[in-house]
Amino acid sequence: MSIIASNGFVTFRVNDQWLGVPVSIVQEVLLAQRLAIVPLAPAEVAGFLNLRGQIVTALDLRTRLDIEGESALDTAMNVVVRHEDELFSLLVDEVADVLAIERERIEPVPATLDACWRAVSRGIVRRDADLLVILDVGALLRADAVTS
Image (cartoon, rainbow, N blue to C red; front, side, top):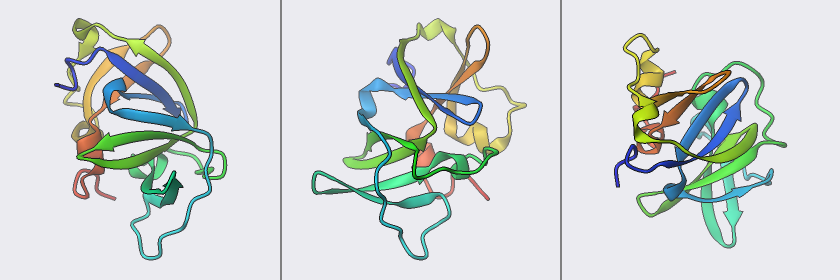
């Protein structure tokens, strides 16, 4: 299923930036979890969490996407997504709604958007007071997708 063909998106916030991923890849949403720190891991890897016996890599989206503000890992919510038969947790400040978004409302990623964001975005949705960036989780998880 194409990321844009799916019309249900889990929406969440990191600082003032609203983001979304297809509901079809979200396994669950968790409150803050205790993370095991991983020595020598890239800065965006906040650690591992144990989800019912399965090891899940926790990715700090604030660091990964170079969003301003201090990461609060002890209060971050976890959006657990499945990608290529592996689970990953996206650490976010707040999880909002599951929105049904018509395909026609998803606009292409503007060429003027920072290259880092273009690499991990699949579209932009205009909302009343803000914009929602639809993330490409596969690109987000690739080591070369975002450069520091």
